[in-house]
View 1: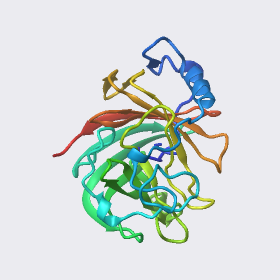
View 2: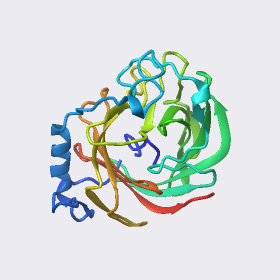
View 3: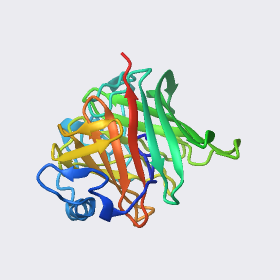
View 4: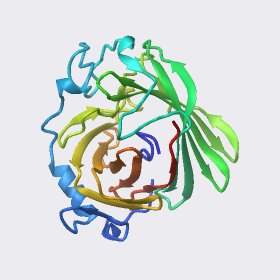
Length: 282
């Protein structure tokens, strides 16, 4: 389940009325996931940018986090493939395994691995390659190489992806691929350095194809139970939106020193992906 999979990390079982049985509750009380989704909608991002959080803003390189379609100028010297943001540490060799149920009820396995490979992005930044493999009944559905780099402030930037889609075990196309710096595609934020409630940011931008954005909803207020374990310390909850699909809303939960724990769609039949195992290298 990468930063944007299940659109999207990240596809699920859904029923918001079963939120408590999914064992996701606020630390302050027995709120249902439906109530959380409603509350998230009502929380407008008051702190949309924060200068201390980024090395880029608009056409500048010294401002807040990127928003919308605004272009950013990034200095490659400010970036590293050594990604140690506590909410999503990416040491080469680390691996996350997720169980995912899509909106049709189909069960899939998602394996996210941090490779030792690097990719030079068109905008001049060297990125770490994270491989996201989705299988169904042992057959590949999608294999994606995602490209991430971390700036000096600690923000993880998402710089594009190369997608290989399969059908009946055979490659059908590479739809969904894009690279920052090519054909107007812009980089976005996968994880801010200092997530605080109300902070909003663009995750990716490729006009008409990838326009995801996110906002931090809570920090340290959630409790999450997934097959990998129970988490009640400093859990981060974000809300992801897709402007090209206005009905889509997704809540994601992260734990320090682990990364993404759970992703739940709150629209219609929704979807769900939960962490089954995690091994950290390094």
